[in-house]
Length: 187
Image (cartoon, rainbow, N blue to C red; front, side, top):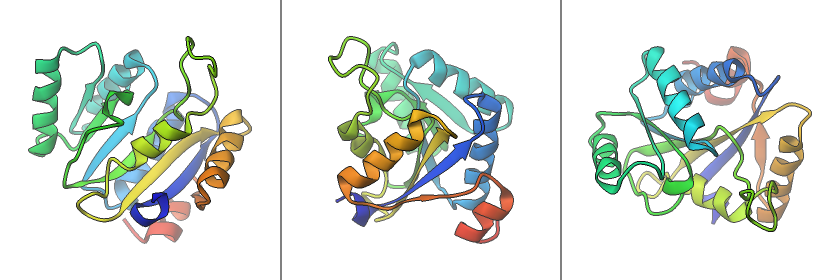
């Protein structure tokens, strides 16, 4: 199921510093051929912050999370579906139940983890990973899913565990123009 609909990639960043992740977002936007992008963060404050930062850089972006009331969430989703917004930053509130015809790129800003009140707190949440990356590709047939991982952190082992668990290849793409161009062609 995961392999048919989704090409999975990991991109190592030097640190958790958001600047390194924004640089990778720029590479994804220039080389992936995305029409619409859904970016998942684990915390609502982070989703809002990412949205503000990308908006300041000129991206057509909005954010959505559980603190938004249902009417506000519907307005945000309508703008996204109508392509008034091409990038939507969200918590896992959208990991299920979103179908959008032009959504062909999913980014895990953070890998999905069990929350602090869960018995497996901090561990990778495999089911949520699948739900996140399968948000796209339902209509187009193919999604690119990128996981941004801190080099040398537990994220690297967790992405490897995801690949083993689902028996898929998660290809590493170097975080550079040449790395992305070698994988996806010129921008």
